[in-house]
Image: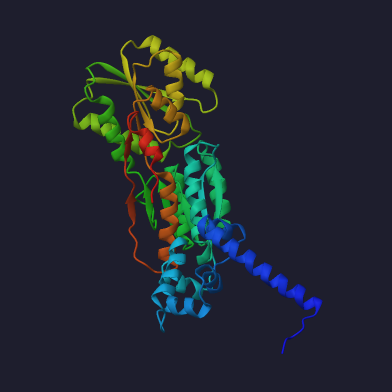
Length: 396
């Protein structure tokens, strides 16, 4: 016997079909494009129901895979596992995340910056982590300070302490001020991790970053090898209000250590130059005066990421025969490297530093997994001849 549907029932049925059709299209698209981004934008914590839809299996099947119980076909298990892998989960971690009721508020404290700056890559790493660990009830906030002004750091850090986050990620630009801040974090039982540069006295959970001292030592070896005696070397720094940068200080100390251990102190003259962060006309005049009063300048180095400003003025003053080395893959730095004005760039994978710091904090706080405390990233040495391949390479 045929059942006759009313017009209202037909419309409802059609709506259900369209909804299922659109949902399936949406799921396929997000699996093949950027599902994680969609989840973050909708502030949506992944559920067993979501995994089931994406894998094309029942919620019961997902539950059995997550908890490793009951009979599940190989095909269904592979489908569920594939979805979890696409979202950077193992079944065990995901099951624990579902069981956890606690929400975590992580705060990242690092320098304010313009587009194309070194710190933009750090921020990208934190943003990626915010997507990947949202499903573990982790919310990531970012706070900024002026890296050339200690008072800016003090103000922001004091405000952070008054709001008591669950964890902090910190770029320790100012050594003494950072130690004072981290002592307060320890008093309040707030775990913290360091990125970019290391302060060993601080009671941190993890450190991801360059071995700054070693990178300075390597920079000296690259810059001074086969350099004739009596060579004059420009050492460029950026003027700061208050303390010197912890990172650049460590690199400088490594640079000097190479000179001392190889008995080169009497062979080279170091010319200290302090740049103004806001006035390039003044900086060019400074360099012009230095070249006019020193006749044997054959090398130059900047220990921060802004070696491009040194390259810009050296090029403008027609001293491109000077061997020049600096740090980090800013677009301007890479351009001058490709032109041959900069001879070497030392890179340190800033996005990875940020991402892995968040990952390890999750492992420590949420999953109680053992983690490594000090993690030095590779010291990548880039030349004109290898920069293109380095930039094009994408991790699979």
